[in-house]
Length: 326
Image 1 (cartoon, one colour):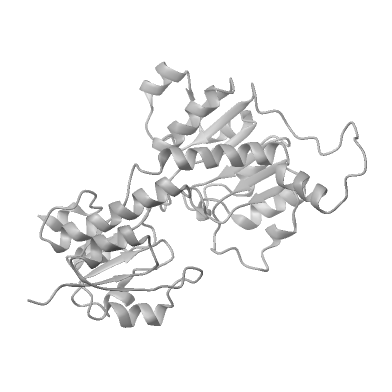
Image 2 (cartoon, rainbow, N blue to C red):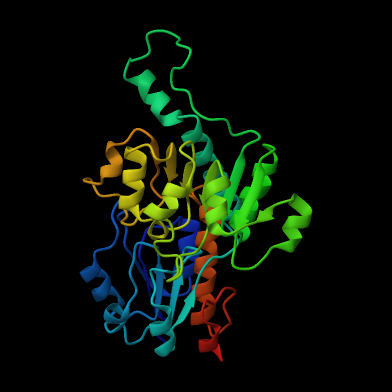
């Protein structure tokens, strides 16, 4: 009996890859520093029954037309905005993700960005490395205090909640904007629910944790940035498209807000001609929110198990479209 065919779009740890290769006929894109080209992906999925993907791969109707045998798309990520789930559902293809595993790791990174932007850490490091530091000066590279300030969290899901818990250790007042109230956290942590406008006006720091949907796309633009304090700091570890990047660039350039810390962008990798690269008041990271060794390995294992379960006729642990399973 022929084994099902699987294509893995990026090199993953051998101990994780063996979960797949021990059971299936598996091919892997092995260039760690380059996403699989679209035409290569189309050719590889032509006979594939399973597809193990990253956020870098766009799984849409055009690609699925090249994959008549495909039964499962297992995404090594919590988000799945790179996948046309409705199209997969229509074709009876199960989509899986890796929820829950990266909550604390991403919250750590969000808070690291907040601290780095507030205290101008990357700018100060460059100042030393470029041999510009000649003497101590009273106002040299002064930033803003974090302890005792006000943090506004947009999207109080699991990651937003984890950030709120970290903020309490810094005696921060925490505001939140969320579609549904979190009475449990209001009671436990003392967080306060507000409108988005009020949150922007009152917060010293604004941290974005909403998923990308049609309602959140472009949520933060010129109007919203102009409502922030001139000493305000914006942090985004959600999705780049939640922020209108050009508007953010203008706000930072004109010092309408103090700084920003970004782990995600409208286009990734960040284009070489992005004007954000010109600024000294923005911290730019290459989408490393979940990038701890332990978390990335857990994500890889979860995605592998989801894929194996579907191709073995079992119900996967984390289906995005369970209606396909009946």
